[in-house]
Image (cartoon, rainbow, N blue to C red; front, side):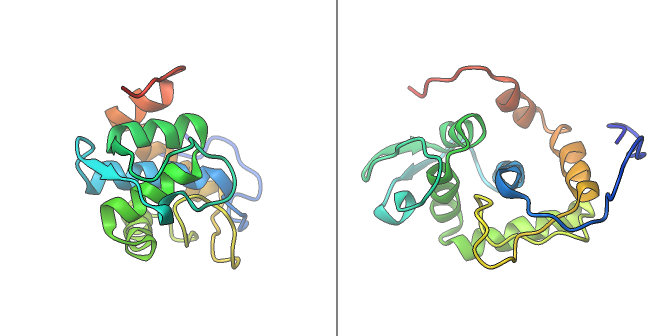
Length: 158
């Protein structure tokens, strides 16, 4: 997809539903950037770190900047970071997922739905298409903070 025009340059099965897996974290990051102040802090709870898969190894009681969680989400694919963002910012995973799906509508991702901020497929409710993911990336790349985070090769939270 051309970044400026949105014209599809090449594609195959671009409307076929697929599992988004960890590419979900692109939407989690963009939702955070569009709805919340990344200069706020989140206090880590047991619920936030009780996740499977990749982690940045948060600990109960940690007080961490939202911006630092975004780096952990995008650079390390941290499921604990995504869960902490969802619960810490929106009060619950369900509230955050609602915002994620609202972002999908805003972007025009009409063939996608998400049920969590990490991409772990629990009930086949996470799905997208290659076309919708291209729309997401087109939108995400227009966000300066998203570009800064994703072009970073190494990041150490203070």
